[in-house]
Image 1 (cartoon, rainbow, N blue to C red):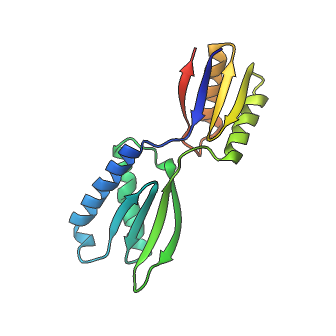
Image 2: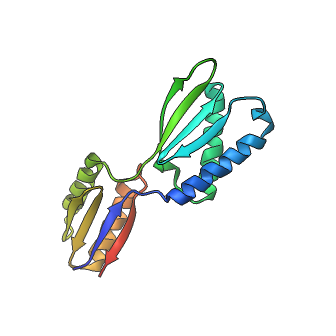
Length: 161
């Protein structure tokens, strides 16, 4: 029985390369000289440090550009709130999304059920497995999910015939 998995996973190697390239650009840019502007990644969390909110936004812009060049969707980034860290420095934590939250998984399951296609959707940990009798139905579900769930970068893998 044909099936596929709907997942939300960023390629962490590409994300790390994008962060490293952004750090290099920040170190060499003239407008960041003599400031505390920096960016680093640890596991699935990117820390952005700067002197002011404006500078943080500039660093995030550099990061978005570098991630786009690495062909990483910027919708994977979950940008946190601004935090003071002493003196005149501020930081923002940016989490890299991995996995589908339970609310989104339920929404996907509901969309598949309401589509009236002859397929079933089952939530399995942080992914949604869609199974059906016909390959065409599965491809129709993929198109439906791409259209309806636009705010999250969904990918489809493990396609079995």
